[in-house]
Image 1 (tube, rainbow, N blue to C red):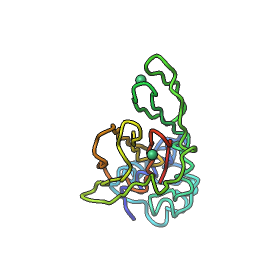
Image 2 (image 1 turned 120 degrees about the horizontal axis):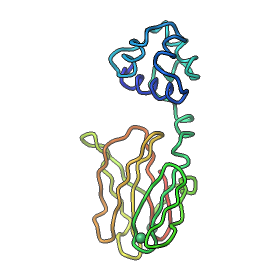
Image 3 (image 1 turned 180 degrees about the vertical axis):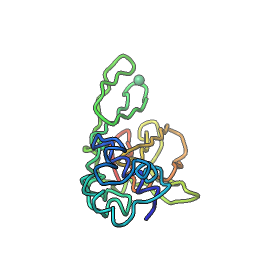
Image 4 (image 1 turned 90 degrees about the horizontal axis):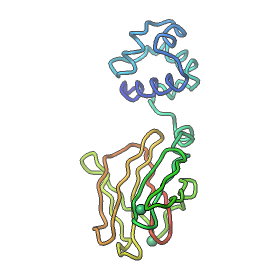
Length: 195
Ligand SMILES: [Zn+2]
Ligand SMILES: [Zn+2]
């Protein structure tokens, strides 16, 4: 059991449920100090409590023990509603975890929803490797003004990290490693891809 991961998930689930540490603690018969300790990764719930804790939070014990919601629940998180915006005038790139009215260069910028992303194909694929806790990403896609990759965005169920790219720039980038992230990237000619 990874205390830190488990702690994060306990905290996320408790907040999602809208209860305080004290309320959660009372519900499962521990002190609020104990809950606070778990959430900060300073301790872990005793194995005899994990079952009732998980039930109280509406998940299986596995979720608490692994510190992960599992791919099904993670992929149904907020980030499913995420939109990207690329200004057709200036190429400015933005992202929002829900729908937003985005204006740039005096015009409304159309939203690209993550659900519209196509799977990576032969012409649009990122080569990803891990080094020093970072993801090192390269691609063979051209970077000309007519046809280039405008951004790469790493998306996890609870956060995202976006790197904007420009024509004539080199086709490599580094982003901090996010476990279990999905990579979205946008081609100026062919649209949004995911892998
Ligand atoms: Zn603009
Ligand atoms: Zn392309």
